[in-house]
Length: 66
Image (tube, rainbow, N blue to C red; front, side, top):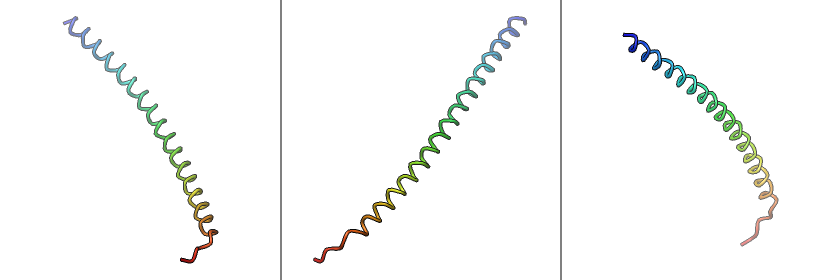
């Protein structure tokens, strides 16, 4: 009986340790997702600005008569 209890205690300790590791990993992954989301928004803004500038430049090019 004591050996079964000790075995269960060891398994429980391992589960708690794994739970804590997974929580830490989850927290890190959430931070990475937030950082990538911010970066994606920043790049989308840069792309929109570049598109606007290109469109403005294209409007300045005179049309050729064919």
